Amino acid sequence: MDDPTRAVVRLTDSAELAAALPHLVGFHPHESVVLVALGGLTGNRVGLTVRADLPARDDSAAVVAALASSVATDDPAGVVVAVVSEAADESEPLPGGEASAGLPHRDVVHDAVVALAGLDIPVRDTLLVRGGRWWSYDCPEPCCAPGAGEPLPGGVSALAAASVGAGQVVERDRSALEARIAPLDGPARAAMEGTVWRLVDRRAAAALDAPDAEARRSWDAVLRALRRCGPGGGRVPDREVAAVLWALADVRVRDRALTLALGDDAAAAEVLWTECTRRGPAPLDAAPATLLAVSAWLRGDGAMANVALERALDSRPTYRLARLLAQGLAACLPPAELRGMLTSVSAGPGEVWAAG
Image 1 (cartoon, rainbow, N blue to C red):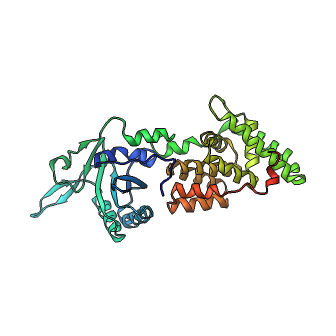
Image 2 (spheres, rainbow, N blue to C red):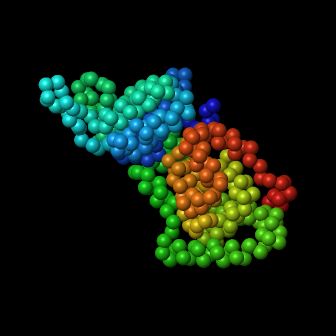
Image 3 (cartoon, rainbow, N blue to C red):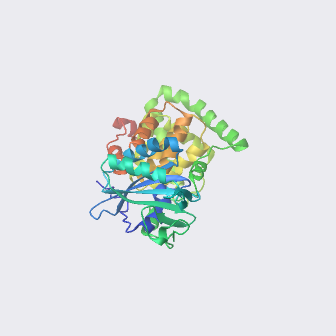
């Protein structure tokens, strides 16, 4: 079932799809192989998109087989295989011992077609995107000859407009996504850590003496910080970030915070989780990083969700929720199914939140 909160976008030709790859991936892919699922009643509705770095020749079959298995979870009517690379044309042998130029990475494309055929998934087209132009590997016309290619279409596409409407920012590459939540450094990091651990020392005793009252107090701290992250709210002070980091260490508070991604406060919550991940010391940054992954995933931004989950698991490798979500993302669980799972999340015993 489609996620009703996400725009349905249909791409009508290969040129449009080639131009749309950054919006489908979440950043401008470089030296990548990308599989795009297409389906729906017309067969042109964009579905799941999966990407990997271009593999070495010996690893190609295994890498594209994994991508094919992932894209198959979307039950596509067809798949487009795209290679994004600045590699030069390759020499291809001709009868009589001569050679001619050929498009690069045909071996990767061949492995992808074979893998998809093994899953009974038709390949709609095979594309090369390079230097602002695109080629179809299967097209015999002069426009797709090596050294030629067609310019990528300009203007604002339907997919670009839908991405902006959903709050997606297309970064220049994956490292730019990682930079969004890169940890603080220098004096700012030392100051933040001091604020956090002083608050933890003060609140730990209260949590032992009256855990339910402390949970209510913690939830109130989350809501106060959330209000600052809405329109016109301004920067969240370090002390409030520290209070949220402490709050999310309580699994009951964290699980209730998950549901913020479902309502009117979803955008503000994503801003808050980003700030807490960026400014939080390990291992307390694992919880907001995991919540950030959920927010991004529900928007259809799998790239940012992956980056956030990697941050969570780097900080706290045994963090159970992050591990479960990483498994779900690897299995290409659709955002609609995740939304349904979150809808069923309860805040725990009602009396805990009675005064919240």
